[in-house]
Image (tube, rainbow, N blue to C red; front, side, top):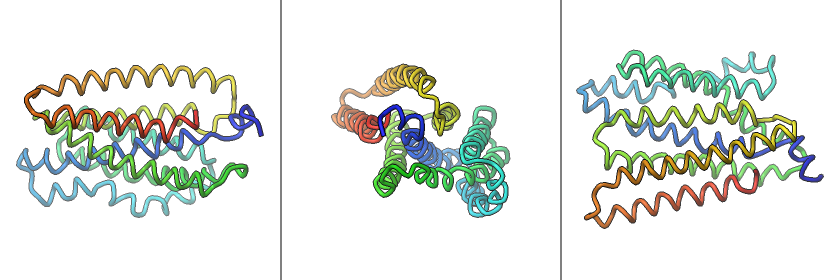
Length: 250
Protein backbone atom coordinates (compact mmCIF):
# COMPACT_ATOMS: atom_id res chain seq x y z
CA UNK A 1 0.00 0.00 0.00
CA UNK A 2 1.62 3.29 -1.07
CA UNK A 3 1.48 6.58 0.78
CA UNK A 4 -1.37 8.00 -1.28
CA UNK A 5 -3.51 4.95 -0.60
CA UNK A 6 -2.77 5.23 3.10
CA UNK A 7 -4.04 8.82 3.16
CA UNK A 8 -7.14 7.84 1.25
CA UNK A 9 -7.98 5.00 3.61
CA UNK A 10 -6.97 6.01 7.12
CA UNK A 11 -4.87 8.46 9.15
CA UNK A 12 -3.70 8.08 12.70
CA UNK A 13 -2.41 11.54 13.61
CA UNK A 14 -5.84 13.19 14.21
CA UNK A 15 -6.50 10.48 16.80
CA UNK A 16 -3.19 11.30 18.45
CA UNK A 17 -3.93 15.03 18.43
CA UNK A 18 -7.22 14.59 20.28
CA UNK A 19 -5.82 11.93 22.61
CA UNK A 20 -2.99 14.31 23.55
CA UNK A 21 -4.61 17.74 23.76
CA UNK A 22 -7.89 16.82 25.44
CA UNK A 23 -6.05 15.37 28.47
CA UNK A 24 -3.90 18.53 28.51
CA UNK A 25 -7.15 20.48 28.67
CA UNK A 26 -8.54 18.28 31.43
CA UNK A 27 -5.37 18.51 33.51
CA UNK A 28 -5.32 22.30 33.25
CA UNK A 29 -8.95 22.66 34.34
CA UNK A 30 -8.67 20.09 37.13
CA UNK A 31 -5.59 21.85 38.46
CA UNK A 32 -7.23 25.27 38.44
CA UNK A 33 -10.66 24.39 39.88
CA UNK A 34 -9.73 23.81 43.55
CA UNK A 35 -7.24 26.69 43.62
CA UNK A 36 -9.54 29.21 41.97
CA UNK A 37 -12.72 28.41 43.87
CA UNK A 38 -10.97 28.00 47.23
CA UNK A 39 -9.44 31.43 46.70
CA UNK A 40 -12.95 32.78 46.05
CA UNK A 41 -14.14 31.33 49.35
CA UNK A 42 -16.37 28.64 47.84
CA UNK A 43 -17.37 25.80 50.16
CA UNK A 44 -15.19 22.71 49.98
CA UNK A 45 -18.19 20.50 49.22
CA UNK A 46 -19.13 22.65 46.23
CA UNK A 47 -15.54 22.60 44.98
CA UNK A 48 -15.67 18.82 45.11
CA UNK A 49 -18.79 18.76 42.94
CA UNK A 50 -17.25 21.21 40.47
CA UNK A 51 -14.10 19.13 40.17
CA UNK A 52 -16.05 15.88 39.74
CA UNK A 53 -18.70 17.26 37.39
CA UNK A 54 -17.28 15.67 34.24
CA UNK A 55 -16.85 12.29 35.94
CA UNK A 56 -20.44 12.31 37.25
CA UNK A 57 -21.98 12.22 33.80
CA UNK A 58 -19.17 10.40 31.99
CA UNK A 59 -19.65 7.37 34.26
CA UNK A 60 -22.91 6.48 32.52
CA UNK A 61 -22.97 8.56 29.30
CA UNK A 62 -21.21 5.93 27.11
CA UNK A 63 -23.93 3.42 28.02
CA UNK A 64 -26.75 5.89 27.44
CA UNK A 65 -25.28 7.02 24.13
CA UNK A 66 -24.73 3.48 22.89
CA UNK A 67 -28.14 3.28 21.21
CA UNK A 68 -27.52 6.59 19.43
CA UNK A 69 -24.03 5.50 18.43
CA UNK A 70 -25.45 2.56 16.50
CA UNK A 71 -27.40 4.91 14.24
CA UNK A 72 -24.55 7.23 13.18
CA UNK A 73 -21.04 6.49 11.94
CA UNK A 74 -17.92 6.81 14.03
CA UNK A 75 -16.74 10.05 12.45
CA UNK A 76 -20.00 11.83 13.27
CA UNK A 77 -19.95 10.47 16.80
CA UNK A 78 -16.50 11.87 17.52
CA UNK A 79 -17.36 15.19 15.86
CA UNK A 80 -20.55 15.44 17.92
CA UNK A 81 -18.60 14.70 21.09
CA UNK A 82 -15.75 17.19 20.57
CA UNK A 83 -18.09 19.95 19.36
CA UNK A 84 -20.30 19.38 22.42
CA UNK A 85 -17.29 19.56 24.74
CA UNK A 86 -16.11 22.74 23.00
CA UNK A 87 -19.50 24.41 23.41
CA UNK A 88 -19.61 23.40 27.07
CA UNK A 89 -16.21 24.93 27.76
CA UNK A 90 -16.99 28.15 25.90
CA UNK A 91 -19.21 28.87 28.92
CA UNK A 92 -15.94 29.56 30.81
CA UNK A 93 -15.55 32.81 28.85
CA UNK A 94 -18.94 34.07 29.99
CA UNK A 95 -19.19 32.94 33.59
CA UNK A 96 -17.19 31.05 36.19
CA UNK A 97 -19.95 31.17 38.77
CA UNK A 98 -20.40 27.75 40.41
CA UNK A 99 -23.86 26.91 39.01
CA UNK A 100 -23.26 27.58 35.27
CA UNK A 101 -19.76 26.16 35.59
CA UNK A 102 -21.12 22.96 37.14
CA UNK A 103 -23.75 22.61 34.42
CA UNK A 104 -21.06 23.08 31.76
CA UNK A 105 -18.96 20.36 33.41
CA UNK A 106 -21.92 17.98 33.45
CA UNK A 107 -22.59 18.61 29.77
CA UNK A 108 -18.91 18.12 28.95
CA UNK A 109 -18.82 14.77 30.73
CA UNK A 110 -21.95 13.62 28.93
CA UNK A 111 -20.64 14.61 25.48
CA UNK A 112 -17.27 13.02 26.23
CA UNK A 113 -19.12 9.71 26.11
CA UNK A 114 -19.01 10.05 22.33
CA UNK A 115 -15.26 10.56 22.24
CA UNK A 116 -13.03 8.08 24.02
CA UNK A 117 -14.64 4.75 23.15
CA UNK A 118 -15.06 5.73 19.49
CA UNK A 119 -11.60 7.24 19.28
CA UNK A 120 -9.93 4.08 20.56
CA UNK A 121 -12.14 1.86 18.40
CA UNK A 122 -11.18 3.86 15.31
CA UNK A 123 -7.64 2.49 15.60
CA UNK A 124 -8.93 -0.85 14.33
CA UNK A 125 -10.70 0.70 11.33
CA UNK A 126 -7.66 0.04 9.17
CA UNK A 127 -6.80 -3.64 8.92
CA UNK A 128 -3.47 -2.93 7.19
CA UNK A 129 -1.68 -1.62 10.28
CA UNK A 130 -0.32 -3.14 13.47
CA UNK A 131 -3.10 -2.36 15.92
CA UNK A 132 -1.00 -3.11 19.00
CA UNK A 133 1.66 -0.64 17.88
CA UNK A 134 -0.83 2.15 17.28
CA UNK A 135 -2.73 1.41 20.49
CA UNK A 136 0.53 1.73 22.42
CA UNK A 137 1.17 5.14 20.82
CA UNK A 138 -2.42 6.14 21.57
CA UNK A 139 -1.93 5.26 25.25
CA UNK A 140 1.40 7.10 25.28
CA UNK A 141 -0.25 10.21 23.84
CA UNK A 142 -2.96 10.61 26.47
CA UNK A 143 -0.53 9.87 29.30
CA UNK A 144 1.85 12.48 27.90
CA UNK A 145 -1.11 14.85 27.62
CA UNK A 146 -1.99 14.51 31.30
CA UNK A 147 1.64 15.04 32.31
CA UNK A 148 2.04 17.97 29.93
CA UNK A 149 -1.17 19.59 31.12
CA UNK A 150 -0.19 19.55 34.79
CA UNK A 151 3.32 20.74 33.92
CA UNK A 152 1.97 23.62 31.81
CA UNK A 153 -0.56 24.53 34.48
CA UNK A 154 2.08 24.53 37.21
CA UNK A 155 4.38 26.77 35.17
CA UNK A 156 1.63 29.25 34.30
CA UNK A 157 0.25 29.41 37.84
CA UNK A 158 3.75 29.89 39.24
CA UNK A 159 4.12 33.18 37.36
CA UNK A 160 0.50 34.38 37.09
CA UNK A 161 -1.65 35.38 40.04
CA UNK A 162 -4.87 35.50 38.03
CA UNK A 163 -6.10 31.90 38.04
CA UNK A 164 -8.81 32.69 35.50
CA UNK A 165 -6.21 32.56 32.72
CA UNK A 166 -6.27 28.75 32.91
CA UNK A 167 -10.00 28.71 32.16
CA UNK A 168 -9.36 30.94 29.14
CA UNK A 169 -6.44 28.92 27.76
CA UNK A 170 -7.87 25.41 28.20
CA UNK A 171 -10.94 25.73 25.90
CA UNK A 172 -8.67 26.74 23.01
CA UNK A 173 -7.21 23.23 23.03
CA UNK A 174 -10.55 21.48 22.51
CA UNK A 175 -11.74 24.06 19.98
CA UNK A 176 -8.59 23.49 17.91
CA UNK A 177 -9.17 19.74 18.21
CA UNK A 178 -12.72 20.21 16.96
CA UNK A 179 -11.27 21.82 13.84
CA UNK A 180 -8.80 18.95 13.35
CA UNK A 181 -11.44 16.26 13.83
CA UNK A 182 -13.94 18.05 11.59
CA UNK A 183 -11.56 18.35 8.65
CA UNK A 184 -9.07 15.51 9.08
CA UNK A 185 -10.55 12.60 11.04
CA UNK A 186 -11.49 9.80 8.59
CA UNK A 187 -11.53 12.23 5.66
CA UNK A 188 -10.41 10.38 2.58
CA UNK A 189 -9.68 12.99 -0.09
CA UNK A 190 -5.92 13.16 -0.69
CA UNK A 191 -5.75 16.55 -2.44
CA UNK A 192 -7.98 18.10 0.22
CA UNK A 193 -5.76 16.52 2.87
CA UNK A 194 -2.57 17.96 1.36
CA UNK A 195 -4.07 21.45 1.29
CA UNK A 196 -5.31 21.25 4.88
CA UNK A 197 -2.04 19.67 6.00
CA UNK A 198 -0.14 22.71 4.70
CA UNK A 199 -2.65 25.00 6.40
CA UNK A 200 -2.34 23.06 9.66
CA UNK A 201 1.47 23.26 9.56
CA UNK A 202 1.19 27.02 9.08
CA UNK A 203 -1.24 27.33 12.01
CA UNK A 204 0.95 25.17 14.24
CA UNK A 205 3.94 27.43 13.51
CA UNK A 206 1.86 30.48 14.44
CA UNK A 207 0.56 28.85 17.64
CA UNK A 208 4.04 27.76 18.70
CA UNK A 209 5.34 31.30 18.10
CA UNK A 210 2.51 32.78 20.15
CA UNK A 211 3.04 30.18 22.86
CA UNK A 212 6.78 30.96 22.93
CA UNK A 213 5.99 34.68 23.24
CA UNK A 214 3.49 34.02 26.04
CA UNK A 215 5.92 31.96 28.06
CA UNK A 216 8.70 34.48 27.48
CA UNK A 217 6.48 37.28 28.79
CA UNK A 218 5.73 35.23 31.90
CA UNK A 219 9.38 34.78 32.79
CA UNK A 220 9.82 38.04 34.69
CA UNK A 221 12.14 36.74 37.40
CA UNK A 222 15.60 36.44 35.80
CA UNK A 223 17.26 36.23 39.20
CA UNK A 224 15.79 32.78 39.79
CA UNK A 225 17.97 30.06 38.31
CA UNK A 226 14.92 27.79 38.20
CA UNK A 227 13.21 29.96 35.56
CA UNK A 228 15.38 29.27 32.49
CA UNK A 229 15.71 25.63 33.47
CA UNK A 230 11.94 25.17 33.84
CA UNK A 231 11.29 27.01 30.59
CA UNK A 232 13.83 24.90 28.70
CA UNK A 233 12.48 21.70 30.25
CA UNK A 234 8.91 22.48 29.27
CA UNK A 235 9.78 23.54 25.71
CA UNK A 236 11.86 20.38 25.28
CA UNK A 237 8.98 18.25 26.53
CA UNK A 238 6.52 19.84 24.09
CA UNK A 239 8.85 19.63 21.11
CA UNK A 240 9.83 16.02 21.81
CA UNK A 241 6.18 15.04 22.27
CA UNK A 242 5.24 16.66 18.98
CA UNK A 243 8.11 14.96 17.21
CA UNK A 244 7.43 11.48 18.57
CA UNK A 245 3.66 11.54 18.37
CA UNK A 246 2.90 13.56 15.26
CA UNK A 247 5.77 13.79 12.78
CA UNK A 248 5.54 10.22 11.51
CA UNK A 249 1.81 10.53 10.82
CA UNK A 250 1.67 13.81 8.85
